Length: 176
Image 1 (cartoon, helix red, strand yellow):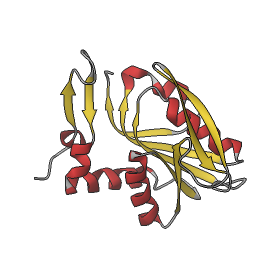
Image 2 (cartoon, rainbow, N blue to C red):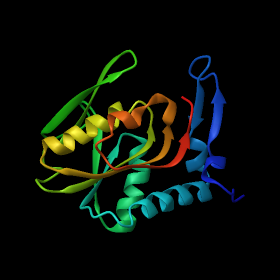
Image 3 (cartoon, rainbow, N blue to C red):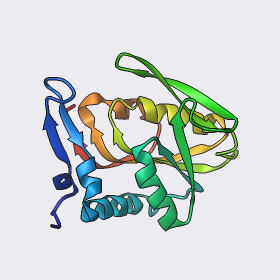
Image 4 (cartoon, rainbow, N blue to C red):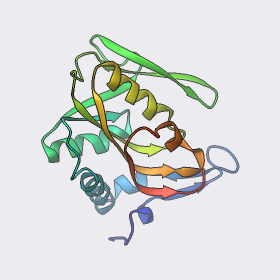
């Protein structure tokens, strides 16, 4: 059944993973053929006037959207993974979580000096993972042309960490 708005494909699970949190479940969107197509088409539309060389996707849902966009636009795809998952020489970046730190990495040859990179993910929450990804691109001499996501949880203020970048989202939820 085709829904009218992209938000209609996203299920909201109250009190997950803890009381007071409204979890926005994107798996219902990607399970539905129309939801998946509409979200990928929406991200491609956001990129129509952006000049860039490659797509970078964050583990793991950024892979779903990023590879489909890279395929459609005939661009290469660069995976950003959790530390320890990539087989060749890498650079890594730590970022803060609510309780502790995490680390992501990228192959050292994944972004060339001067490359314009679009970063794709499913969600902006606190912005930590996306900010760390931007730092990796810049560390390798690339330029972040745009950050494009399906959903944004505006109440977590992730956009503030990404203020110097061109950031677009298809859906914005005002809360957390």
